[in-house]
Structures are given as structure tokens and as C-alpha cells.
Image 1 (spheres, rainbow, N blue to C red):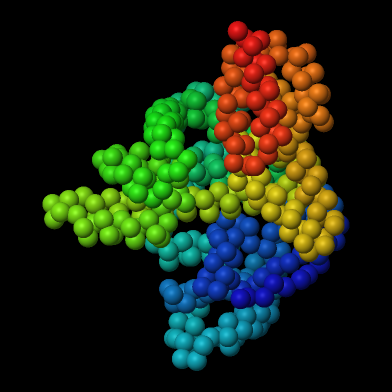
Image 2 (image 1 turned 180 degrees about the vertical axis):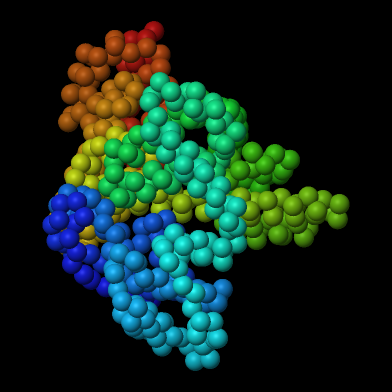
Length: 451
């Protein structure tokens, strides 16, 4: 693994010196995350601890991808190195790369490294080696230019500007907006990230593609609800054969299969596919092709679900890092409330526990403060019914809970009963009799008050 180095730089904004970690060798095989940081503009990027400004450590750089026989060198012009100094710096880095190669791995391309004159030129060469054509890169730059023009536009002009560029707004455009918002958060530009998130929401509302997304989400929600009802009908003792029967019923509907896998992913484990293979082997000859197609589709969907779960964890970790580094985490939370879900809270809790395990009291307190702030803001943004339920569950005694119910139950309508049932379903498996008792008490009182 290429080594991380240390240096002291002066902030480009406040001029305060601070220590940074950086690397001058990116090996795509040994450290693929470093490659991703390079491609997304995050390589050797550090936030000033004094003013929060993003700073890039300028250093000679070597990029190596042995699988593609690619070796690229880059020396930032801002360093103003003489030709001899450049050659020495790059020569030392290349020798460091080749010295760590396994015996017999040295190839001719290592003797003639390519040269990049700019960081963007380096990124372009890496992308081209990955099969990204110049046309694809120009299309991406066009998306970024459109996003920048939308960010700079007056609010009153945005609807017209979105409509004028409706044909350019597609899934790749929306993905680019999301990636840019994440990068801004990592760079400490919370206000701009918040502006971009709000802009993305408006693009969804005003564009043809956004309306398609809304309709697709509505249909998906209906499918998920139908599948959830079928799963619940199986009962608490449902096992792999039950889910296989349900999957066979959904064999002609990829949407329902995908919803089923998403809802009960743990059921589709190695043993499930072993049992399915037995079923295929025992099936009549004319049934086997359909069962084999079902097996392949389920394998594909479980793999997709796992990839999405990993991506969600990475997104949660990125957001948490932005919060830890931010001088104003409340602003970051406000700009990203839609991204704070169960996965994020799990990642946050895991980091709190890890800090405690390491004995890192400073980080532990920082993470706990973020946790409390997130919970407070989530509660403030809850529907009134959920806020009331949370207050009842948080009461210091059963008598206090009863008093709260008596005083405030008249403030709510029939939606309170549905909210109570939803919360009860979520906590049913937590083995907390006291909480379930308060929920039962609340529901009984609500039902009586609402007639």
C-alpha cells in the first residue's frame, strides 16, 4: 500500500499553517480508493482546521495501474520546479514504484511513463484507459456547466432555464448533481451543498425526467406495499420454502421480485439457493428452465441489493465525516435531513462505540454531540403525531405517560392510530415490554378519545 506522507502547508485563505497527510503515488491495484479520490478531486485535499477552507497539497505525482500497463507522471506547474528538479522528483517516485514490484513483474511500459501537464489531463488519461471516451468526458463537462448555470441563476429564472434544458436532464445529470453535492460537503462548502440539494429538488419537480421519477417512485411504493402485505400474510414463522413459493408467484414480475428481496434479503442466503437447486433438480423437465431463470434473477437481485447496501454505508460514512469536520454541523444536518436514515444512524452509533473502544474521549464526545443534534432535529421535523408518540415513550414513568396522554390526546385525529401501529410494528422485536406497554396504553386512550 502506498505510504501516506506528512507536510506543513499554509492555508490559501487564512494563511495559518497546519499539518496535512498526502500521497505522491497512486496505485490503482493496491489502493483503488486513492484512484477514486483522484477522479473525484479529493486526492491530497485537506480542510483547514482554522477557517475550514479546502486546500490541495501540491506535489509531484505518479499514477500506476499495472492491469492496464499504465504509468503517468504529473508535476504541478505551480511548484515552479526546474527541469532537473522535476526529473529527479519523478525519477525517485518511479524507482519507488518499480522497486516494490514482484519478481518478474517489470515490463517495458515502466521505462516510458506518460506525462500529464495538468491534473485534469491526468484524470482524462486515467478515464480513457478505463474506456471513457472523449465524447463521454465532454458530455459530463456539459452537465457540470449546466449545473453551474442553474446554481448562478436567479430563483425566478430557474423554471424557464430548467424547461429550456429539459432534454439534457436524465439519470446521469441527476447523479452528477448528487456527486457534486457530496464533494462540496467533503470540502466544507455546506451552504453551496445545501443550495445544490434544493436545486436538485426543484429540477425533479420542473423537469420531464423528474416527473418520471416521481411516477416511478409512486408505482414502486404501491408494489412494495403489496409485497409487504404478502410477506406479512406468511406469518412470523415464515421460512425459506415460504419465500421460495412467493418468489415463484412473482416470477413474471421483476418489480415484485426486487421488492421481495429488498424486504427480506436475509432469507435469500446460501442455504436458500442450495434448497432452490434441489427443487430445480427434482422438478419436471419442462419446469426447470423457468426455475433456473428465477434462480439467476434472484442471484442478480441479491447482488444488487448488497451493492446498494454498501453504497448506502459509504454515503452515510461520507456524510458523517463531513459532520465531524464541520464547524457548524447543524447546517450540514439541515441540508441533508433527507439522507439521514436508519443506515446513517447505525454508522453513527458504530463510530461512537469504536471511539469508546479505542479510548478516544475527544472523538467520542464529538460523535455523541452529533448524535444528539441529529436526534433533536429529526424530532423537530417529525409529524406532530410521531412527536407526541416519542414524548409519551420518553416519559419518566407510566403515570407521567398517562398524564401526558390525558392532557394532549384531544389535539390529534384518526392519523394518530395509524402512527401508533407503525411504531409498534417497529419496536415489536426489540424486547422492550415497558415501551410496548406505553404504546398499548396510548393506543387504547387514543381509540377511546377518537370514538
